[in-house]
Image 1 (spheres, rainbow, N blue to C red):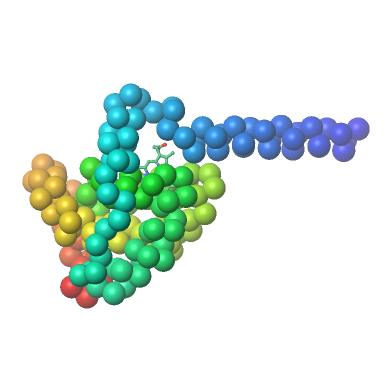
Image 2 (tube, rainbow, N blue to C red):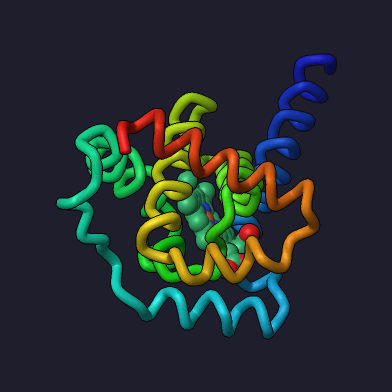
Length: 156
Ligand code: HEC
């Protein structure tokens, strides 16, 4: 009897988990505006020319970013997104890491975040500057310090 219940409970749990991961793995629960913005990013380029970036940044691009961030959507989604500030990438990579089945650990998330901060500071510099100028002084100082820290860490 006990065993039967246990089987029932774990069967249900498996169902609920499968249900949650289905919802999480597609975009149908998003608002129309979010879906439109994301669809636009999806259609853009899906590679970054990293040949002029520091070697360790290039390694994160090929070993982690292009592997981990293509499991559920194309790489064009992060490449062409409006996220550009360190605070935006920190929050967003955490969100992606916590999606079920993301297969991304903390150390990998840290490196991918560094990559995105570095890449945005070069490739999306105009957007970064515009966003920094609109931030409150404390938040701006924190984001500027983070960009400098990442650039120093990877030797540029
Ligand atoms: C487990 C599946 C999964 C993985 C792995 C994943 N994503 Fe996503 N991503 C999604 C889904 C689903 C959405 C749609 C928005 C949502 O549900 O949060 C999304 C949306 C996005 C967006 C668009 C956000 C917006 O609102 O404009 C960006 C940027 C993004 N992901 C970046 C990344 C990065 C960077 C990685 C690698 C660290 C990654 N994703 C890995 C599932 C995933």
